[in-house]
Amino acid sequence: MLTVNYIRDNKEEVLKKLARKNFNRHELIDTIIILDDRRKEIQFKADSLQADMNNISKEIGQLIQQGKKEEANQAKERTTKLKEEIRLFGEEMDEVSRKLQETLVLVPNVPHDSVPTGKTAADNLVVREGGKKPVLPADAMPHWDLGTKYDFLDFELGNKLTGAGFPVYKGKGARLQRALISFFLDEAIRAGYREYLPPLMVNEDSGFGTGQLPDKEGQMYHATLDNLYLIPTAEVPVTNIFRDVILTAEELPIKCTAYTPCFRREAGSYGKDVRGLNRVHQFDKVEIVQIVHPDTSYATLEDMVNHVEGLVQKLELPYRIVKLCGGDMSFTSALTYDFEVYAAAQQKWLEVSSVSNFESFQANRLKCRFKEPGDKKTKLVHTLNGSALALPRIVASLLENNQTPKGIKIPATLVPYTGFEWLD
Image (cartoon, rainbow, N blue to C red; front, side, top):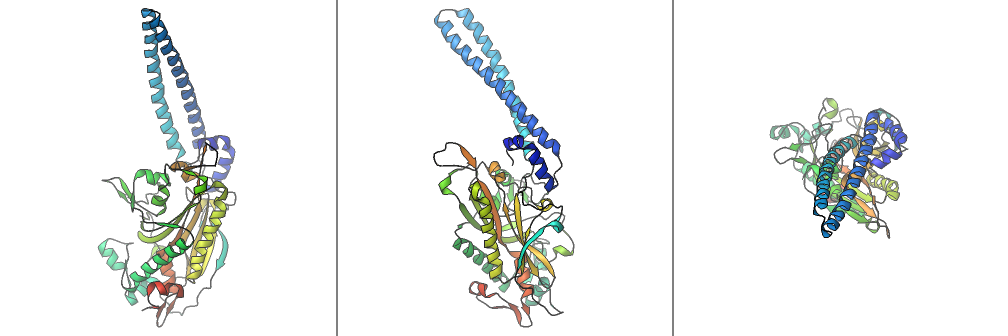
């Protein structure tokens, strides 16, 4: 959430930058400023009345001491009227503050100056590519057929148990999942991240803190009886560990990693592009999160990108790194890099990670601040996160790219984790 002061002081710049996210609701910005003006006006009037009441209270004490009972009673009547006026101003303040908050949460984060202009994924900028695309025989199978052939991935069973988009991994397929999770966690820990195992459901405050709520696209599963939400990513509970926390500059950066299942409704997704593991409702993912000083957040973003790049390189996957254009970015992000790996049998690029800097947007919602040495004032931290990595499409690419007549060759870096070299 943008701060009111930032919007007031940089109105034209905010509008110009938000236009790169295809945001054209200029009236919201004007409404925020008008509501903030009214909030300040109410506060000034209420403070003035409170000061008057304090003065009259002192006067009442003096009148009583002087034996002027009638005048003291008249002064008490004035304080009664002042209390009522202050109460009414308080009610109006609550209403104005509520409207201001409701309007603020409708405004997305402003994009960084380096974000490319564009409206869709077709306008994203490829930053760099790595790895080598395999050459497969004409009869190469997509991963869903490989899963059936070797009996380690079952979509029909998942549909029976739950519904479409909930695959079942069996035998070596399940072990491959566990191996990838362990590999990603070990790599994160070696890079200095502290491991967490958070809850898989969060409350409204947590969903609001990281920007998943209000859920504008209906992507979260909601347990209505208890008003809890299944997490779409470990980013939500892990970042919310620092909600309503004041840190010191010496504690920064804070580096966290977590493995969790993730749940997404993927409302509106259909067709050939969502077949198999390309888009599912439940999947495993290892997340990395950093809470950092504002001066270092973009250097941190590059470090996180390099970390994820190292993972796909060790898995020997062809990949590309894409800087998202304004129209393809999330509501909360200031700058996002997506990682895509090539699935050779499908002959398509699959997104496996997003690494984002949210600057102070999430921190303002979270009320996560820090203090510099010798400074009593608090400042908002910057928050960042990234998938390191999401498993389904990584698995899809590994299966398709490494298929041979003998079976599916496991990358050397995973063999110590799987305990086998071939998936057959």
